[in-house]
Length: 608
Ligand code: F6R
Image 1 (spheres, rainbow, N blue to C red):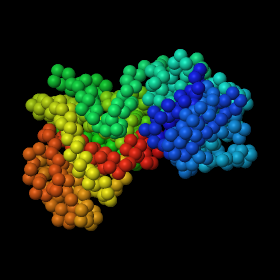
Image 2: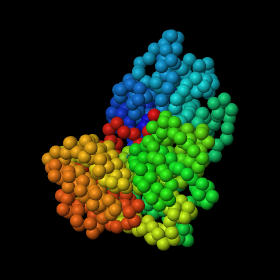
Image 3: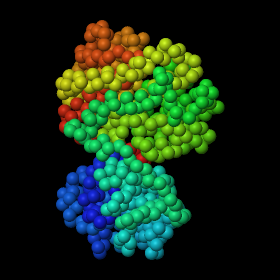
Image 4: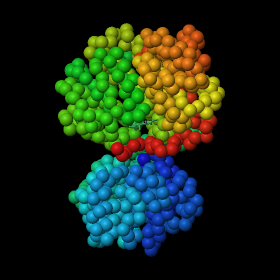
């Protein structure tokens, strides 16, 4: 979602801001803008479209001289993508400029009030309300005005604010939308995410909810919403700036798919000690694990799909009932929590608004939450009672691949740990599963090496209108993720169906040549899925099958087969998803889509 960058220092601000915004493009946006104080006044330039439009408009920032500025990439919520609605927004006298990520929920009554006081609005955004409201409360002291606004507004916000009367300062404010600040010898920075400042500094401060930062050229001061000064410790970012670069790959998505063997290894190996699974971060004794009666897994999108897989795996291995919920549903459905209910929230970004709300809702009702999170220091990581990190490193492509693979590993580990402690998994089965887990990185590598075959097949489907993914059990969960990968980046309509459910209505959509991708990795369900493949083939479908090596019987019903190495059936998702990710990727590349930044999508969904 929206990206914020700000700079105050000894260098020109606009090029630093443009550079930083380019590192936040992955978040998804439809317009971009900057505000720079030019020595006399605040100059704003903004434009709908990609960042390069703004770069051209400002000649790489050269037409916006000044050493203090804020910039923004906007993902439209209130008001269409347009020049007027793009940020920054001014107050009426153009002495205050604001960039905002989040949603001001009570913006309508505030707007009414400001209109009645004579303020005029030029955009449809909720953000413009903030610019005027700060103006309304501003009596010469910016901190006072900002904190008054914080007491008045409801919703989520990360803000960058500059005042022409205080050109030696930038203000950064946060509530429920991510924001960090950093410093080096040439100035101070604000940003929505670490990659935007990594070129300049590795020492960053995570701003907490309801905190304000006053940044000057050479120092920063932190305040509470009551204007009390507080001290904060910096965090040193230890991942390499290269981790957030393409490193020779055509797209981040391809690079990240290729990082999956490492991601799986990094998430797995630190938790295997002396042939046992040790998850220190779980913070649960064996008694507590034995006391679990039910698990809620709550997440969105692909993380939800990882959760659907986990339901089969945890129920199968540990025999604990699991309910998997979309976070946007869970938070409003008044779920029944009983004694012994454990809540697991899965999130790559750790900032997804619905997942964060589900976490808070659970905690409010007195239940501990385990976060399975990728971004260190993110909101979910900080607010969860315990955090199990997926060590996938920065994921830049909007469509997740490596973080999803790492989530699966974390969930397998949890299932096995619970299964062992609760006496549902004997030593032989446990050790054979451990062996299979350790083999996964090499097997994923082999599958990735097969990319050209999948690319050739994908090229035949760039004109497809509808694609169906079918499977049973874990294969259904794999189908859900395969389908999402294809549709979100190639814009081809696709649906995942439990294979046995297709004939209850949806099979009527199968026409001559419709592509049906059938996933059949679960031996116990193989014959059943085979029958469903025959059914769709008989109605004209072209059937792509993903199955285990050796299952050549499938060739009776499939037109094209992809074989995956054998593993424990519970881990099949980790392998079967690889060709499906490659398929979605190559269809999108073949169609000329913007693979890393699909239309309308945002990498971290920080609004409801
Ligand atoms: C799809 C994708 C999204 C995310 C979802 C949750 O490729 O990336 O569906 O999985 O928005 O995001 P996180 O995991 O950051 O909570």
